Amino acid sequence: MMDSLFLAGFDPLHETPESCVLCSLRPPVFAFDYRALDKNQRTRETKGFCCALCAVALVRKLQRAEAQEWASEEAALAADNVDVTELHRHRVTVFPGRHRKAEG
Ligand SMILES: [Zn+2]
Image (tube, rainbow, N blue to C red; front, side, top):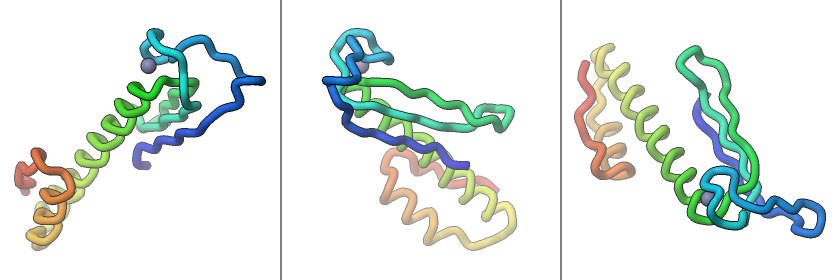
């Protein structure tokens, strides 16, 4: 399972969280639900209400997880002697700064 992130607005008349559950510093803007697998392949879920800055941090967290997923896939294919040239080129374009060639 790949990481997933769900962001949504909420009704301030019926849901009244006082502060972001992630930073406790700012009032929340979104309801969120982030799911990922832990080291034991169990789903780990973090949910609640978050501020806009923490929502951006969650998107960046998802981006890092996705970059790692693509790199792992590339490495697995390279280990099976599959030509990963195009996949690598695409990954470098999508995730600049994470262009270490997969080892295989
Ligand atoms: Zn926050």
